[in-house]
Every structure is written in structure tokens, then in C-alpha cells.
Length: 118
Image (cartoon, rainbow, N blue to C red; front, top):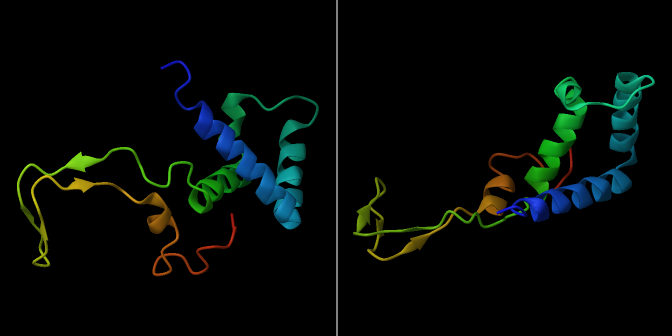
């Protein structure tokens, strides 16, 4: 349990760095926010919530590059499940959340493949 989440953080960090390299405008805007917040000191945990653009960059990175595209909370139906649209999920069916499909749905996101923290 000690190492749980280390892969997620490592992947997030890699994707943030990749997106900042690929999107220099985002990089400059984030650098400006950090420079203004830091003055002559390091940003501590309490100040991170005061950095809205940093928060937006992290959230957009998680949207575009979800670290676990298929979330691990799989569920097994014990009985037939009847949905409102007359579909039936048969008993003993494993259901999983496909995070990548949710975060790249063009009905929700205007440009689902674009990295746009704004």
C-alpha cells in the first residue's frame, strides 16, 4: 500500500511536462502565475489552491491523459439488471467505467483531443 498512487503521480507529471513542451503559450502563462506567486520563496501546499491556472493545467492533463483509462472499480452484476432504455445487463456481467471515453466525448467537450486548460 505504501507505493499506491506513485504510478499515477509519475504519469501525471510526465504528461504535464509533455503538454507544457507542446503548448508554449500554456507554459508561459503558467510560468507567469508561478513567478508572481513565488516572489522569492517556494510555493508551499497551502498556496497551491491560490494558483488557479496550475489547477486548470493539472485538471486538463488528467482529462486528456487519464492515468487509469479503465477505472479499477469493476462491478459484477449478481442478477439481470433492467435499464430505463429497455436494455438488460445480464447476470454475471462485469461493468467498468471507461474514463477515456467520458473525458473525450465530443458531445461534452468541444475539442476533446485538444489540451486547453482555459
